[in-house]
Length: 83
Image (cartoon, one colour):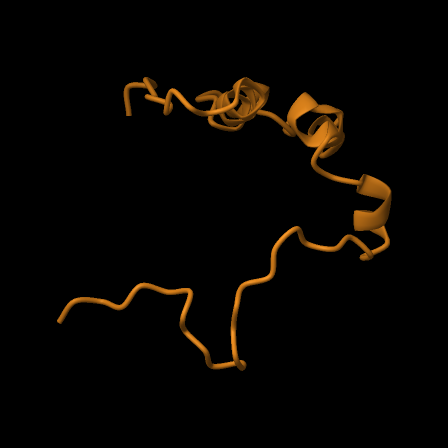
């Protein structure tokens, strides 16, 4: 609420910068709200080595990890609620 965010020390600097830009209090200066829109994400340094935007646009980007699920109703990746 007061605008102070404590980031983990191990957080990569590029990721920290991305989060700061996304959580800016003023919507007018928040990342992607300007005239460049979503292009700001493509240009951000953290995404440069992480995302192949051309493959993403063609829906051909392969995820770096697939969850180990047995079927459509498998809930192994979710925590069980305490009763």
